[in-house]
Length: 135
Length: 128
Image (cartoon, rainbow over all chains, first blue to last red; front, side, top):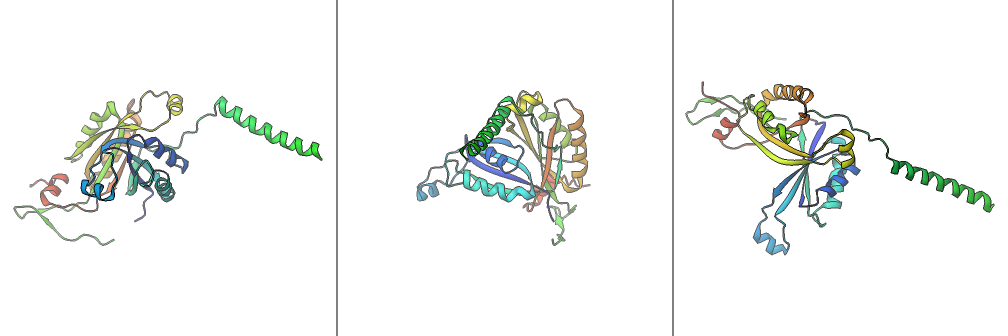
């Protein structure tokens, strides 16, 4: 059975949920929900591998279309995975029914954005002018 | 996928209805959590959990939409597969009609469960 949506669950140390959302949004996710959680690591394994697991966790739940699942999981693995300070793990579950999803809201551009775009356009023009004058 | 064919019997050897279960996640504003939990419970749902959560919309988006808080509740419910359509219809109708009642809901299929009593409880199999 093919599923149109997947639920990505990413469990990270407390304070890293914003990083998770930033990474997911870069890959096309529109939003998520953060739940506070408490980790229960194996104390003996912690000693053996000489790592300390912070008990306070954040669980980020992100509902995404199936076609961007792998890119998000890969980005989470590299940016907030176990080898980073976020100590995150991420996995996906199949979702067979959804209701209440709306289309992405496109925000109106702000004055800052417009200034930035104008500055870029002006610098492009000046570089063209430079090349023409140097010839 | 191979269809499950074995029968399920309770402790008195009475046959139970065989119905697959799913996990329903409903994300709503915290102020409306009790309302939605009551609504879902009316569809033969015997176990639910409410998790305190927060949305991840940026301040700019919240300001644009005129929203003030990001406090949410994630309701986790174990539901029968044959009730999913009616539950989701009811939820969608409420999402679109109640003030401050917007939310999302989705189901994840449960792949395994152990214990006849637990199955009977979660699937609301009452002895008739």
